[in-house]
Length: 101
Image (cartoon, rainbow, N blue to C red):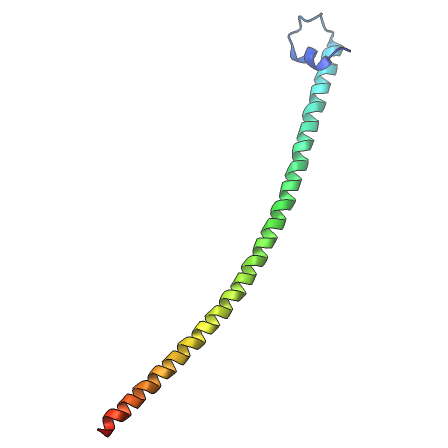
């Protein structure tokens, strides 16, 4: 079988190809290029779906960490208030003791 793709790529000296064989070879090359582009497009679609999934999962993780951080901040604020109330009670007690003397 004659490889029309090779004919269309080579110089026109090879076995005196006709215009028809050159056109057929060019069409075959165009079809190959189109098929390659379609393959790349399918891969791009897969990549897009993967990156959308990845972005969605990362956003969920960010939300989870945001709520976790809020819980830690609330606990920290509570501990700070307890420390302040304990320190103020200790100061009052010290002042009362110094006033008594």
